[in-house]
Image (cartoon, rainbow, N blue to C red):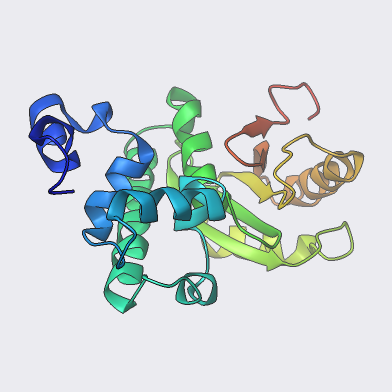
Amino acid sequence: MKDLPADLRPREKLLAQGAAALADAELLALLLRTGLPGRGVLQLADDLLQRFDGVAGLLRADAGDLKAVKGLGPAKRAELAAVMELARRALAAQLKARPVFQSPQDVKHYAQARLGGLAHEVFAVLFLDAQHRLIACEELFRGTLTQTSVYPREVVKRALAHNAGALILAHNHPSGVAEPSRADEHLTQQLRSALAMIDVRVIDHLVVGHGEVISLAERGLM
């Protein structure tokens, strides 16, 4: 990056114009700091974004995926993981501070940060208190999710353990397409019925794709 004019170097550009002025590759280059022989850090950053289909895919890649990339040593892999965890914690703190009804977009951002870009399907539950503030988010099931692989009794058990007053369901589509399926609708109704027996309301079910989160509640499917 020393070969670039000062006003085009990511660090100087950030300090002069703010982080929002930087492209994804420039922000990533600041984290990586160094490239490879014959491959500058900006090129390395751009290669990584293309390989993992963007920022979300890169930061949600597992340790094995990152370890296989030449130029990503333990320190750089740790920094990427730390940045994503900080982002998730910041979003969670916002949801714990006020009711989710006041920040539906924050809920979607949080679900995207937790589940977006994963190569396998994950079913998570956001447990809420009586004021609909976040208590905890737990990933309860992994793999190919169907009505038979997501056990209502386990969701009920965890809701009771958290003394939850309501909850939000969320799962990802590794294909990247967030469109809810009929199976997603059936599963939502099944869980709503089971949780109604303990007086816990299912507020929403979010389907997470690549860069998109769809709410079943907003679609009128609940």
